[in-house]
Length: 195
View 1 (cartoon, rainbow, N blue to C red):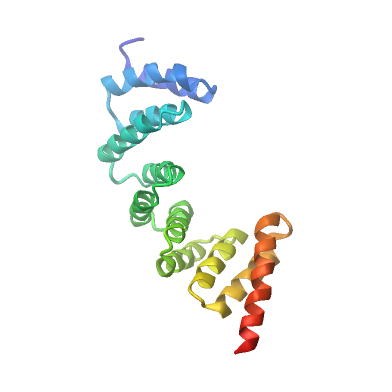
View 2 (cartoon, rainbow, N blue to C red):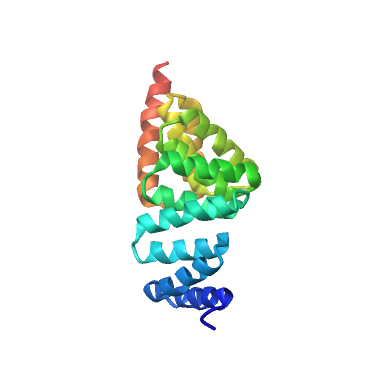
């Protein structure tokens, strides 16, 4: 069914699932040309991304967002793409929009918090980490990143508590971060003992 956009979209999705992004692109381009829905554009953006055509993927995601501005999952996916390109301000905007659309989304709050931390906006990052914890994130990483934000703003008591919480939860699963946390705990304890 070469003239059926649904069939072309499905063929493209199957090729993507099979790890054949290059072969999926013509199918998905045809589907987008015939039926430019947000879903078709997202699938095509995914194919472009997997075939390392980053500029085309970004342009297609822009069009997908424009077609469906209230799709939180689409915004989270786009935020991830922008994050991977190290475009932190634009990624933060997408994650922020997703938190407005889906306030209980761990992915949206996690993305926003880490982007704010990466941009050294520590006060807002801490607020986002608080919200992330409120929506049910109990991962060790939450406490590690929160500790970093407290540490950078010289809030040593909460930084120490967050590093210790991270170390209690991490259970030797994050050796690099655990080493850093232990070192910072020693430094912070010395700093607090001087006061």
